[in-house]
Length: 169
Image (cartoon, rainbow, N blue to C red; front, side, top):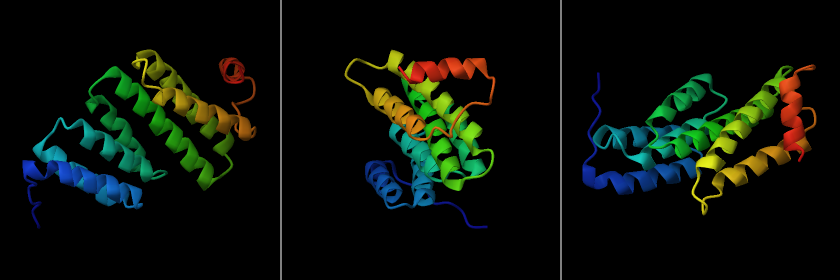
């Protein structure tokens, strides 16, 4: 079988630039592969972890990509990052589900958006004052829910109804 070649440590910054470019070009598998090469020589590289996680979310609704992205959350360096990217994973999974369509989508996508909102709310509490990324993502999710009233909780779910009231504030 073929063996992987090892990336030199000096090549890490350029490799990460290339991974981000591949993501933006719609080639998430290639971006993920580059990040794996970087993480093999620099296991704690936060930028590589984040670009890899984003490349995985670009591959949704692929079930294995969702599971792998969620599995990476513990590798992130701090509570804010874990909360923020938990929200991002849930938000992107909900959007992928909406694109795919199907009979179960309204309740399942709503549940994923709810999960995203809970994670973004936690990230808002952990973020430094100048970092409003989670606020912007929260607002996007709220606007999507408002624009798609078909996305709703299961009938009779009191906890979901309370969240709906909070989202409409």
